[in-house]
Image (cartoon, rainbow, N blue to C red; front, side, top):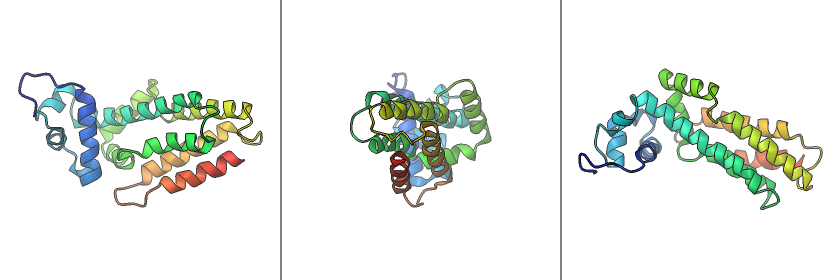
Length: 194
């Protein structure tokens, strides 16, 4: 536990990681400010000192995880010609499902104030599913240029299918549900073959 008056480094990420552990281990219903700070090993008031309440925290957690996945998707441009196209796309799609993604999304959907904050941020340009989709389109076009994706494959349609299916799995998953990773792998494989 950090002593009073001592700065806690990377407070947001420390709290986000703690929240993910609580959600994965105990389910979305167990997420409270106290559960997060206890899991993070920090002062009880730290979450409220950095976020305007639990709804704001949940919204920022979701937005942070979207931004991380969008960054990973944009990095696909550096993977052109490397590994397999399917493996590169799977890595991005599966990133949305990592770290309790379905449970975090489920939690956000049950908190109307958090959902409203997320929608506002996305409307204002925060990276989300659209950013991920755009990066996948650019990647697939580049791979088509190298002949690694058949000309018959329509990059915008594949990107929409990958992001849409992953979004569906993210929003309809729950703790204890079958692991959706195999479905994502099969989908990506089928789509990139044309």
